Length: 493
Image (cartoon, rainbow, N blue to C red):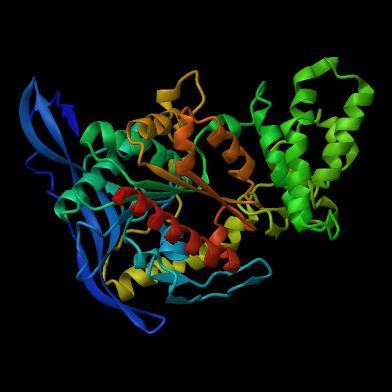
């Protein structure tokens, strides 16, 4: 990072931060085989090259970024893959992927109808991706234990491009310090982490010449035009509808019909008749409007009258609030299988996501215990699991008068690096980043047809964090391992 310093010199009274990494040795037994690995956790200092009136003024500390790395003992760094992982928010730490899916230890949080009571439990993750790749979990500035350096402004990192640059710098530093420039390299992002990953793929290529082998995009958000329910944008109403149908199916509105049968019907409707009806606006006659409302109601479990009064356009939070109103419940946005109670049964939009409420405690307790008691890292700062303040103040100034998207950047990276592969994972009950919205964006990536085979998609009968559902977690672990293996075979050709 480079900046022009108007003030001139470094403040001698300003404390100089330093890395505080701690390493420990561990063994994981998987099917009678021992996996010996080293865990390294702590904060590394990000520095900025500062120029004063065009003269180099030094590398000044700007932020301290927390990470946890797992490396297989005795592995050949020339062939051993490494995966850099992060969650999204923006404002989220990496705890979810770390202790839910990828890391060598995982939390038992339970699932819908069988949530684990406190104080929770950590167990060995015998499906860990560490069997196939070294892992580096990164907490962006103001999440986890990551903070701006003393005297610096945290808000400078709370934005699209600044976030990509700072996380990209962490990846460069770790790669250089650990002698891993020749290792196969992957990114794993969830939710906004997929936005970050899509931007990073191009940034790492252009800024550092660091080319990746693959991206693991979990609950992807590559183009916000499919997620933004704003006036004049009918696309979200279309691409969310199959997810509404899946959630309605889970809560019994489709009887004993198979989920795939319901989804096929919904997908056929939103691929043809529904967008045509919306595009006609006032030219749609009242009988046609009634007929369209009836089809939407049958798929979503809402009343025909409600859909008609909503002008055939059901916004997502309104759906999660309305679906189970007669039962006195609301459903989750991150995972529509979860339900909760709202104190105001007449409210149009719920105020809390039942999914967050259900699993936040388990992940928070497990992470704080794990770092201190098992990885021997101590820090008196609160570990910021999910910062609402960061999320609400996030800057997208780079997209003024345009919707947020990294689909163009990802496509550019793929065209420049035809070996870059994508694994895209979606949950059928994810009401935040719906599977059909993800499919829509992938179908519109500006890449040549011969690169389409570089993209693989997987679907799970759960939600945003599909790994809280045990059958989905087990299948997803296999799918990610298979993706890395296929990407490495491509590299060797």
